[in-house]
Image (cartoon, rainbow, N blue to C red; front, side, top):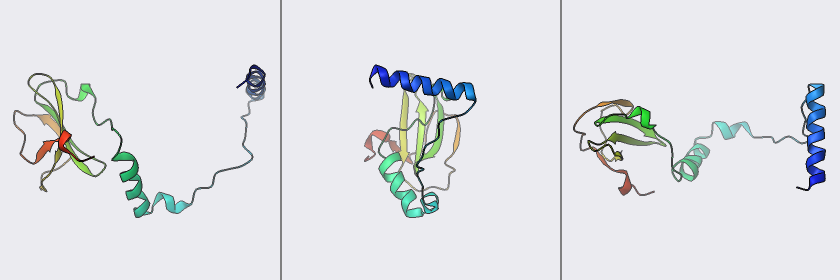
Length: 123
């Protein structure tokens, strides 16, 4: 953007600020309502976005101590995140169906064999 264009944008923004208004667009994007409730589209978005990129599933504050864990479902995949006795954080995915609840947290010394290391998950 040139210096002249930046000055024009700044003047426009100042005029709107002084008038208590905001710039409006002439054209609006219309999104079909079906995009928000179509199960096929939802699954497509899950596969193309959320199952392909890293997701923030926990903060270090949620697992401050060795043995702390958090189990949750992320993009349809049950995941277990834990802090080891050496202080490292590990993530696992659930490979076996179980009646155990997915979303919970706590502290333990041993985890059920329902989970495999996340590095073995075929992304």
